[in-house]
Length: 156
Image (cartoon, rainbow, N blue to C red; front, top):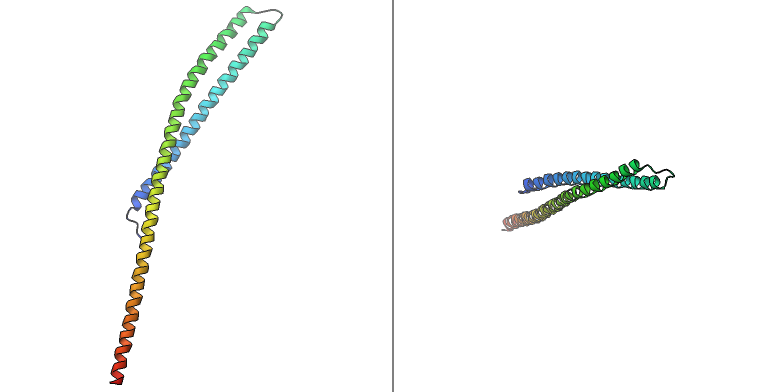
């Protein structure tokens, strides 16, 4: 039996490499997005701590106006940092989405190439079966003709 040689194997190999690169990019984008989400959650927790500290400062028996003002400024600053982080997070979400789309395309292209390879292999197997069948028919025909010819010679 002949050896199957897929003529577009180089393209399939390229698609596999592209998919691996897309997986790597997607993984990196997901990691970065999670880091940014963690930062945002940390900022929100910190703001909540400042807010709780503000309630405590305002409820104290002796109010420290300077501390309350520092606290208010800290809460305001945290609002700004949170807004900035939310904008930054939007950019990372867009990057993540682009990486996801690229990965999906790369997977689709690889699967398409694999389907083409499978079809080519099925066609190869079918052609091999036909060639084998033809060879068997020729052998049978040759053997029958040889027996028939030798049978005539002995009788004649």
